Length: 165
Image (tube, rainbow, N blue to C red; front, top):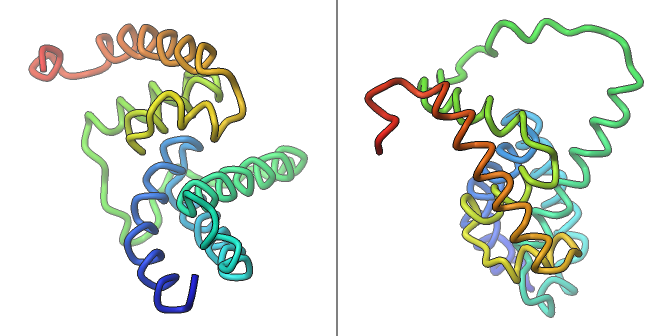
């Protein structure tokens, strides 16, 4: 992949990957940092990415792994941060978005990742299986369990007028 192709890939994919990783890890700011770092690493591997069938998959997986690594490092750090105040300029999410994010956060990580890849990234069950390294039956089971849990959680959380959509 040459510089022009990489720039085009970056501009087309960055926002979409940030949304997907943010849904998997629960933090848009963290997702932006991790996706940016993943693109920096992708730049170093751009010649190999040209041969790869899905450079977007490579960047998304790298960003997700970076986020998990950061979380593990932070878990050891006991410093409490004040996250109650939004950062300046951050748009406030809708009530529905808050409910969906809260419900996603209650799912086990594997189920949350499967749901995000299927519904946010529009990947097929086979593509999710390949990206996560599990059999397609496992992906189907995770999707089924996650949907059942989300249905229960969201029925309780969404405003009445949005429950029958």
